[in-house]
Image (cartoon, rainbow, N blue to C red):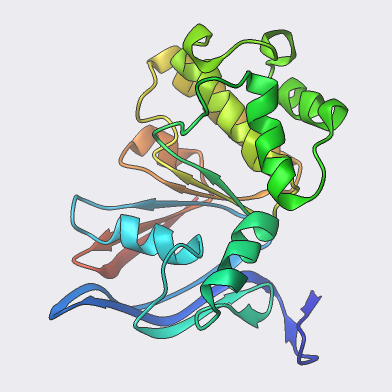
Length: 229
């Protein structure tokens, strides 16, 4: 149970309350209400144009809803300034993208340490430990071009973990991977979830979604159904 800055109790890590997102006359999201418990593994699915990316951007503090509230750890972040959202992304949300966004001229270790730099002070030993968690300690000095796609994605996971975020948010994390590397990444997510990490995965892959405790299916900007396992 969490206590927010107003002294209120909350059982949820994340609460979306009546979220609508308008782009001119187009409603990308329509009255989305969703709660995510601390330690939950949630998948978000839906066809192209269903609102998955928009919802991910709002959850990840990369965009704001037109109306509604985004409550993260008991505090409404939906009306925060851009500067405040930068801090929230840095401190509370670990982002993993389909495109790896690694700095090409830095080693795997240095790419992880970049995330530390924006949070506190780079710590090589801690960054190496993060790479060890994803099985890449021996590849720490390699640059992205010297790593396979699966290895690059695991560097991204280590980078997302390094600042101990409240939430891991992954956008199509296996979209560019072959079957073997997809399995490696999903095994890492399974282990992180077993350790108590809260994970939200946006995916088009039913096999990836099957690993989650719940799957939220979007259609036309609305929650069409929620599948529980």
